Length: 151
Ligand code: DAT
Ligand code: MG
Image 1 (cartoon, rainbow, N blue to C red):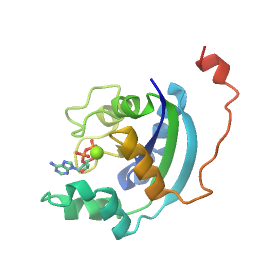
Image 2 (spheres, rainbow, N blue to C red):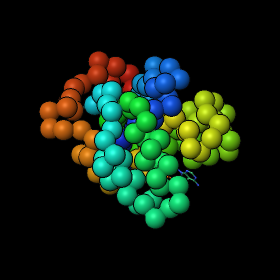
Image 3 (cartoon, protein in one colour):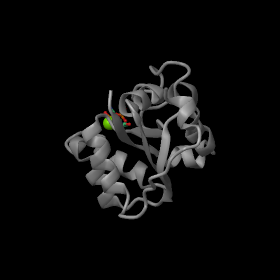
């Protein structure tokens, strides 16, 4: 397994419902490393670009409206196997099918209000981090707990 990067985003419903600390804390406690973090009002063009693979879907306009309906929390997380592991922590797309213990399983009820995004591949992790963060917004740093997480 290799060190990967993933783009995690708390959607406007997660921010409005006061779930920011709760959601960040799940990735933090797992042992992944935060390398980028900001509160951000997403412009329509960026939401469309982020979800461009879904542009032919009937729900696409509603999805773009939802993502731009209020501030989101943009995060970059780094770690061995972080892409797939973050998707497991998040749970499946429809929160009613998401396992208890996952973010969507514990905190959401509808696909159209599923509180959080996570990249689906290492390639998309890189693509999405480059899309949502500017030069200079990411930090390279060494967590003091590293020897207690990695043997
Ligand atoms: P995920 O967010 O689990 O990666 P996805 O990439 O297939 O899921 O879709 C992106 C978002 O689009 C998803 O979080 C919510 C919305 N969405 C997906 N399928 C939908 C559907 N059938 N109806 C309404 N919204 C949908
Ligand atoms: Mg997806």
